[in-house]
Length: 100
Length: 483
Image 1 (cartoon, each protein chain N blue to C red):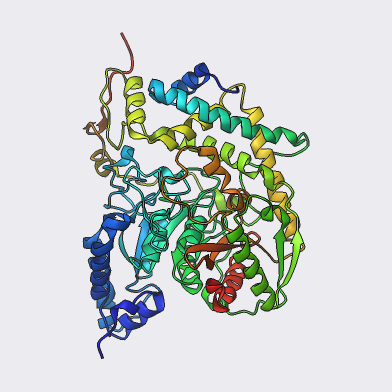
Image 2 (image 1 turned 60 degrees about the vertical axis):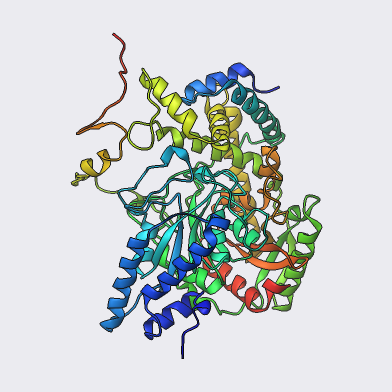
């Protein structure tokens, strides 16, 4: 067994995910099977391989990807706030964060 | 002579008729909405229709025709857009409950470019939730039926976009591909479907699943139309720093370049035990057809193929766990009220995400977490480099690589509900190209027993879209679809 119930609870906490008892066990078992399968990567010796975070080629030059740090107008507050579940313009209202 | 609306199914047919005033763009749009009204309940391909926007655009095109102005390459052409792609003012849900009421305040660049070319966007199509799935059975808004194979899945995650085109409810549609989600539904629904190289089409406005893998690409009825739509969308976008500066070639103009003499590699790892016998027969016939066209076919090796699924499901889920962290009930989407902020996050996400999404968030968070990052995520990135290197080496010997798109034909709805790993393993032929950033197309390659569509995949080197399209076009024109 690669992943325990406690592992899933910890992960759910990190991911801010409420899981029912049934979900907890179902995902534990499924993720366990997947992790077991993923273990096959250990068959490969990758000690001298550089990790590939992106597939960008020489065709995406640094010049093209960086821009000047300029301030531009961005007046989207009204449009964006009205999508929110509990707006109080110009704020998004949320339950209290800091306990006193 | 009355125009036969039943023939208005390709870009050429629609655009020519509209330009010649044999039909108005408005009438074409109305025809498509009639078809949608007749069949969408059964197919569930569309989630949202945007008639007001569509008719406004159609009228714009008709005004251009009346004024004798030059028309765009997609003038009057009805198009559907996968519901993970932002459309300003039109509900965009990612087929999830957590975005059930989300209305984007902006258009994706791909959408902007389609409309600038005259396309008429009819609506948003159903898909697997947050593009996670291979059968469109993970949508919060119901399954999609495969129009080419009743009772069977259309493939996923872009099932709705594939089904819409296959059922003539759109002339072309946009899908997204992260591990096969354009190519496989194209294969399952019997239509051509392509993803350009990573960075070929801007991801601005594409609601992210896995940022180093996601791509937007077209479905259409023929390869020529796929080429046209890809050309319209492709090109550098300052809003997407991963979009390439490489110039966009004129794909439609070079489609008919001869393929005689092209070197085709057949990777032996893709023809092993896991392939359905019916698929194998059709693909072998397809390869034979390529030989008849004058291509030089040879066996090649992609030795790290067997590790691709494991690599993909580490990287994609890790990136997804990060990209989906934003759905927390604060700024958009429904919120489950709670006494504390954390509790609100947990309840909102618990209620709003479906099972597959939760499973992938759990897996992705785990492989990134302290103590496991090196063993899983870092390892995955290293194996990704090995897989990309396999392809680089292969492309020093061949011009294109040909494989089946899927090891299995379209399966029955509900048949693969219980075993997520089994579902993942069927992505084997498509995740490799995704990991390596390469372009790939699926073209129809016959139907097993005359019924179940099979797709042939052509993979090209980075930014080799023109070559891939030429091969696909030649294959199609030589009767590849009816093998």
